[in-house]
Length: 452
Image (cartoon, rainbow, N blue to C red; front, side, top):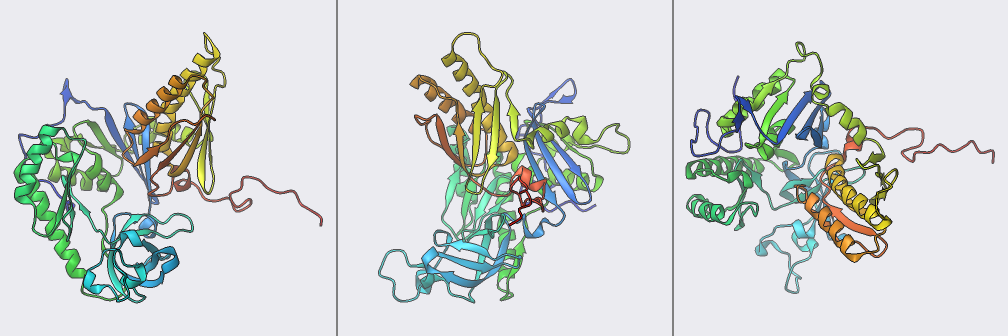
């Protein structure tokens, strides 16, 4: 079987002895994380486990080509420009037109129509109906909203991200200063002329040869995309992100993963070939879970199924007896913290404080697991002592730091409320595993028959 084309890394057989391999103990792989992949004809589900705890869950449907398009690159055709919204609607070949905001538009000053009074031109001076543009999806279509676009195209590889026709340069802040300095010297030598480079966290320990090979692959890939973009006028797909399992492997897999377990042999072969190309020392961590010989399905074997069921509930119970109640609305998500059966042992303030600390940790986990985005309001139980409020805020921020999705958190108000935002990229867990009720239209109530 031909290996899946990777977006970076070493070729099959090229093993870098300088890169850290997977840790083992007693011949068994050791790691903090595990990935379970469950494939059915209509869906592919991927569960990320930290220890035995489910922390993230992804769903890819067979019909997702029109909805799960984050990262895809298109040749788009501008349908109309709305100056009052500072946005343009763009046909990219999907059922709903995508939206391109003024801040995501790239332009050449020579292409700006006359009438600009200096400074940043207005969107109608840069784009016009019928114009063909190169664009990339940054946010999947959700509900009635179309996909969001940018003209700042980027192509991710294993170790670096290529930003074509840009001067952008950056190195992951998660790397220590010594490693950043080493990588900067390497990138200065292999950086392609006219293109920007962002160095990813996965580049830690990568050799100059590996980084150079990654850059070369991405530049060649961009050349193919740029060439295809000039060969037509209508809307069309130029580059598709790989299957969700391969994409997650590219983003996540490192020596902290003890296993990637897949219950479909075709996908297992694809993923193993990809890992053998980019991380050969971890290829043996990709395992085939044969559903015909195993006594339990993969999600039941690793206790994913029961945790998923709990993640779909409105109420989440805390270990000490408290609870969270999660309600989603059009504009925001509200999370209410309750003490429930947690009556404490000393005094009310201490009981409430300990309950809120526990809730802060669980809130961060639920946001990741349920993939809740947008505005979020958390109603912590009132605390009289300002120091306790500050400690709960710090605990929430620390827990959210493990979330790779960007968040912004404000301090607890006098009413005990925390306002925060989490970047919304795709539909949440509940939406991906459900359909809107046709009787109540999603309101959760059915009106009595009224004789009017």
